[in-house]
Image (cartoon, rainbow, N blue to C red; front, side, top):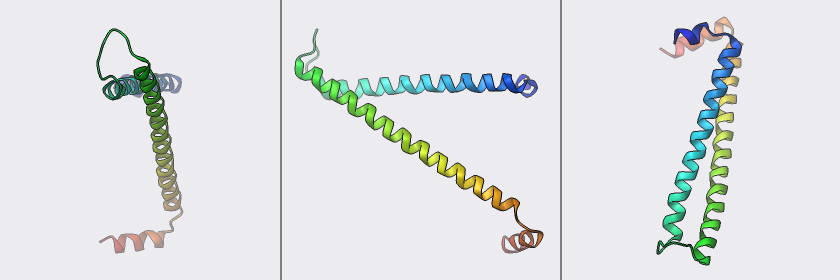
Length: 111
């Protein structure tokens, strides 16, 4: 931990980028695992050496729907996080503009 505290800005950015890449890889692995489990259970009725044409079509459609759903949820989650960050930033900016008398009122009513 002390190494992180004494790291340069570029070293910290490199570490952050590496963590982001690891998270992206973990998310991709999770997507693949869940999609495989769900689509296999849904589409494969009799496991065998080969997939018949209806199983192939089912798996293809299932995977497409799963990825579309994953992307939709990811976008909605990203939008929500951005909205919350903007709300927090707006609160911080408004808080910085408080006058002394407004702080006194806030403290008075918070008791």
